[in-house]
Length: 187
Image (cartoon, rainbow, N blue to C red; front, side, top):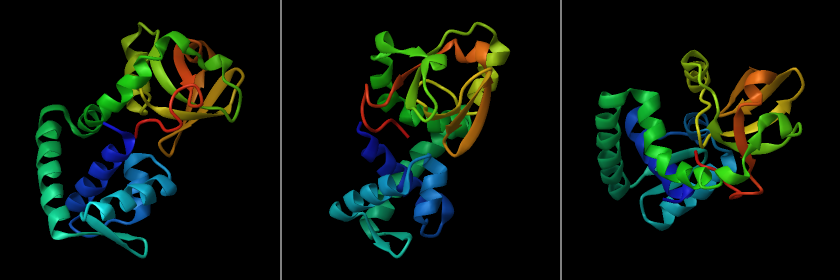
């Protein structure tokens, strides 16, 4: 599934969850993507007759509402089984798999320069508490990030969050620069 299809599903799901037309900013916050990416997905939804943009709001058509209902029901079922954040991650896992295929080119975060954008491919960490902490802040395989600061600690920006990681942990997190993979990562 392409990233834009996943984002289109996010828009439809969020419209259903909110019960009112979401804004571009709502989608940016929910999906961790840029406004430009949201606008591109809205254009695709418009082409398919599922939604239309009115100002900064995204209005679903009748067909879009039906599609949103199906997506929402699927999301709720997965959410009941696994919880919200896990459900959201599972729904996006297919797109993340393409990054796992690039694992051979992955390098430690300590080799990323400040300002570099990348996608996390895997963690070579055995401590379950450290893994749980990283997952809790949203760092899982397929997560897009930008290195804000490097040195004794690494400051990453990911999904609208700022995450601080010790250098020893950063050495064990492997990623690929987005230029080396796809110009767009998963949501």
